Amino acid sequence: MAGTVEARPRPAQLPPWDPFREALRATFFLGLREVRIVLRSAAVVIPNLLVPVLFFFVIVGSLENIAERSGVANYKAFQVPVVIMFAVTGGSAGMNLVVDIESGYFDKLLLTPANRLAILLGAMGADFVRVLVQGLFVVVIAMVAGTEIATGVPGAIVLAAIASLWGLAYSAIGFAIALKTGSPQATMNTWIFQIPLVFLSTAFAPLDALSGWLKAVATYNPVTYFFRGLRSLAMVGWDASEIGVALLTAGGFGAVTISIAFLALRGRAKG
Amino acid sequence: MSAIETRALRKEFPGGVVAVEGIDLGVAEGLVFGFLGPNGAGKSTTVRMLTTLLRPTSGQASVAGLDVVADAHQVRRRIGVALQDAGLDGMATGRELLVLQARLHGLSGLAPARRAAELLELVGLTEAADRLVKTYSGGMKRRLDLASALVHGPRVLFLDEPTAGLDPASREAVWEEVQRLNRDDGITVFLTTQYLEEADRMAHQLAIIDQGRIVAEGSPHQLKRSVGADMVTVEVPADKVPAARRALAACEGVVDARAEGSGITLFVSDGTKAAAEAIRLLDRAGIGVSSVSVSAPTLDEVFLRATGFRLEGAGAGETGEAA
Image (cartoon, rainbow over all chains, first blue to last red; front, side):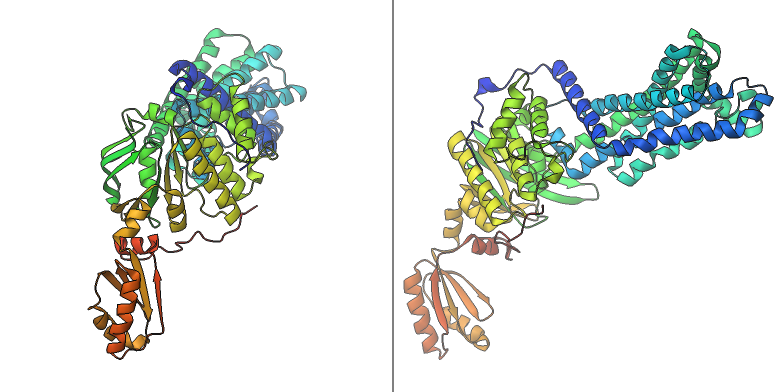
């Protein structure tokens, strides 16, 4: 040990504590930390960018002619919301939390006077930034590949932003599993929820083109209504009611998943 | 005012496992309090309750005069904690980690960066301050963890086995720094350890915990005196140990006696007198004495007497740092 420093506080040295302000500060700085981790592990993000792009080209290449013969006029634009969905729900939300739990750093954070919600809100805020970047990347690639978005570049940005809200809601599942189990394996398997949500919806064909049990399930799948809102931006134009449907669907989904994540946080922080 | 006080503090985990069985502790301000026990004795569970990480099943505990359940937030503002496994963010640099820690404790403006620089110098990590923590050696991580526990100037410092796994030089550095913090800054230190040497050297007061219960408590000096002022160890042929024990039963001033192998240890009030008498009694019984030694009791004997077994790896083990 090298030097000497005053370690004991005089009572007056305890800084004043405004709970709301400190919670905001903690959320901001913990969010910055999460962004820093993502930037320092950029290699982990690359598959999240490339896989949806690959999906886009494979699905469009396979189904474009069939879909257009069936009356879907602009199948590339029809598929943009789907690949953005893959982009914003890709990656392993909650893995940083698991690493923190396993290393003991999560306990270190709990030992600070920072509001515990800030740990989750900071991580979710940073995740929103991550999925927004992933969503924008995919929409840019789709447009470069010749996809015509009915609302143009502003609509493409809004589309990616709304999809990122869904991504945020979806990532809360990963955070909840991470906090509840502390298990990397369980958290990495969060992607499995995406399979029924996307594949049992109107991801590849309009609702009218579906039949039998798939049509029945898709009718009650919230993703169907989320796609409807995004597709209106991609294929029709600015329609507040359709955008509202997408926002409401993402909001409702998020209300459920984020509540579960907060409950999981409370359970872990309670000790 | 006590810096730390517990009354009938108990923790039972789901499944009926009782880790801490109603312990009473009192630690005066400004002391280094050693909490000694083997693995699984309940040391870490006690620390986790005192530091607000774990809710007690029953009983009460206060730290810095504040209840650890009702005033958990205020307790966290006044304590520094370095847990058994240095919980650090491997993807941050040492400096970034300390700055964030300072911010989460409410320091703002330039204060976090200034405080981080001071503490990095204090623990000798200025050179490595801008390297990722995941590249640090075990000793460096311990020192950084200690620095992060000090970032807000705590009144009470909890150190859970702070030197476990450290090489002798790093261990010495941690000991010196903890003693300095206690001596110069008046910080109360709650130190859990399974190293007798560490407890003996560092602690003003000690408690020994075994199977969730406090089995001995006092200053190291008091505890050692409780097993007798001196120890007389006589070595006899192994087959003569039972006869030697019978002969030595007549020795005056014996507080306790234990046989291990071919040695018999007498805990006595006057070692010199008892050694002479033991030789005379064994000679009279026709038992040859290989050697006789007189020594002062150690915490090892205290531990043995309190728990019925010796602490495994009681000395601070020789383990190297992992780079």
